[in-house]
Length: 251
Ligand code: PEP
Image 1 (tube, rainbow, N blue to C red):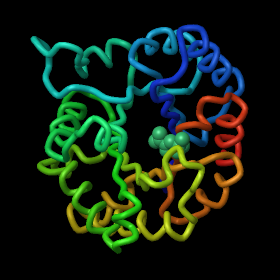
Image 2: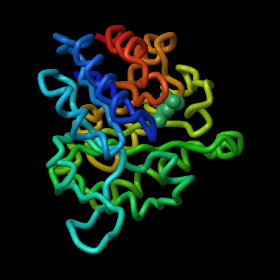
Image 3: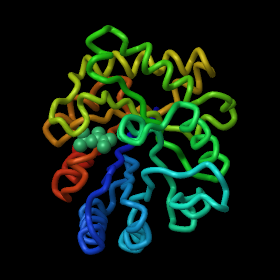
Image 4: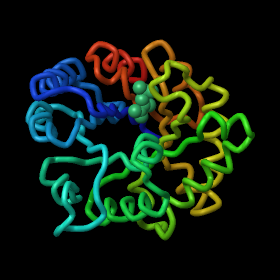
């Protein structure tokens, strides 16, 4: 039985005051929720203040990116040890904005996934197709290549650290959510691929989140799909009321 996992990706939003207010608001509203794993992923610069606001809560902290090297002359980058030092448990990797805006490749993302696992972080590996790829019937080819590329060289003993987030790029921040059938179809295919790459038990245990305009009104139907184990939430995670409602729906 997979425990639902809902994570909020704050992206490049909030400021020092609103980040703390959001974290503190969620900590208050989500007290006592034990049946759902919840994480929030603020911008790097607000991790420590968010960690303080979340310290008495069950809400875990995640980052939105990490660099694969341990330390040294990598101007502007952040290491796994730094994230651990700021109380992070999770790290989002391969988000479509990093793939398509910043230009991250599967090879780079794979190095980051490995570094995160080695560094004691739990990666959330994002995969998903562009609209033109879906329209061309290439969704599963793209998603399969991203899953294989992101997990290259990660053995059975280390894969349990990983959550996969299926995020169709055309659904992210657009208000256009994948239908529950579209989400389930790809989630099921990802689980079948994990079974092929690893084992039946590992596939059965792997949590696969859906991301792409998830909101209170579509949470129940998405989460009712047998292979949808959680949500990676952008816009709706910036409002205490919406994110709380989504988690309470799942709980
Ligand atoms: C995301 O940032 O991963 C995301 C899914 O965003 P939104 O929920 O706003 O579509």
